[in-house]
Image (tube, rainbow, N blue to C red; front, side, top):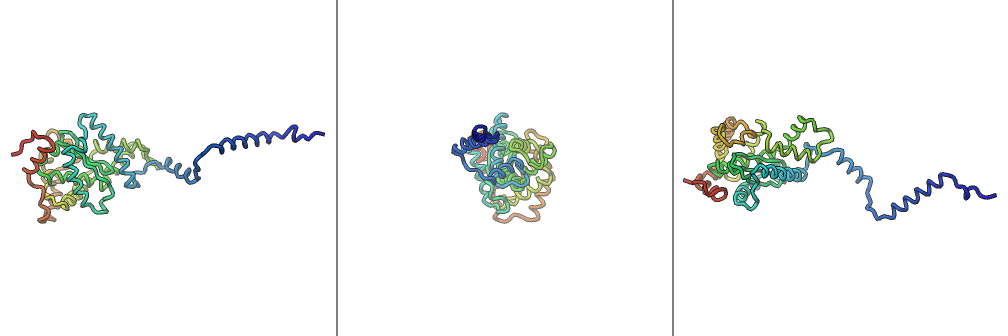
Length: 298
């Protein structure tokens, strides 16, 4: 009698042969080992998305850099590009900004790499986004009468970054739009919100006051006269109905802020080391050199 196992093997044998053949083909290929923890971590990242409330400085700077690129593209499309890093105006703004960065305390986010840029726009405006990116319009540089006034604006924008105001606004905007979930936001959503907040959305009264107070403190550490900030704010308040005051759409309440800044200065008068940047003639000549030689200095 013939052995039935060899002449007619059970049906499960064919399945076993197929499995062994597949495994042989698969494991014959060189592959990189992937642990179960890699898979779990990867899945967690996909599920969680980007959490605006708990973001490392490295993550913030990386996303801020992408927002910065989108802002530059939009500004260039509007005919008001960000000027090159080697431009005299950018070098001038960056020199002031970096001196102020050097005076930050560890609690004021010295681990953020601040970038100061000039927008080739005659309108009066300044804004910032997450990750340390500050933008100053050429029109604002011309409107200021002293370097202390300009430093006050730069310090104010630094205050927004230090206090994470843009991130807070982005989160609030995401809630309003119904796109924020427990899973967080995807990268495209974060970038879109970042551009919208930087260019279009007004800051709250509380955020403006906090940034004024912090900016005032920073500029004083460098040696700038704090009256410079008050003077420029008063200028905005007096010319609020004038042409080109784009800054008032995103930085409201200049009159109230003048009173607050003036009171802070009265409560803490400047020392002899906080009298700098008030020379109008020197500033005008500097702006003539770095912005436009058509500027007339008396």
